[in-house]
Image 1 (cartoon, rainbow, N blue to C red):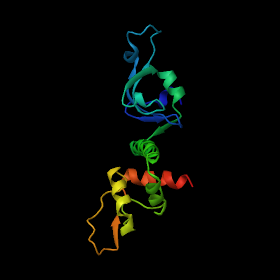
Image 2: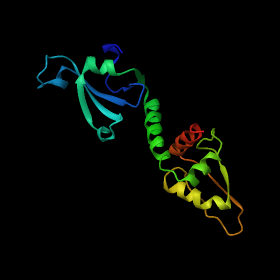
Image 3: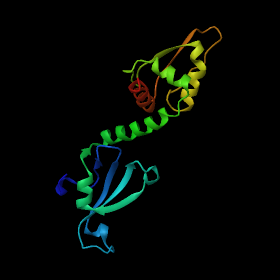
Length: 166
């Protein structure tokens, strides 16, 4: 990206696994470093391969940041980017039964979708609820043959991950 494209308060991605939010730009960012005075960028790491850096504030030269950044993201796109990363991680922690349960749900489900479940899926639905995938599981009476659930936003992202595996 061009140096002039980098703006304070904006999210950027390297089009891989990195997501950064620019907190400050200017020569003051790199003051005290033993480098030629030049503009710097202070940014918050929101997503990276090195999970230990998530949430940290980091600095680098403006030119290095512009070289790293491949695309600017809106706040909404950045939230979806973060959600997708969390969903990929959560999808690896599903039990085989939970994975099969999610595969049985249409891949185009939304958070508004009411998903009908058979009574024998009650335990797996509760397990998915405990992981934050299912919004809530209603009380099911002895003679109820089915019940309905809906997915959370992270649940929708996990659902997409599961369906992409096929």
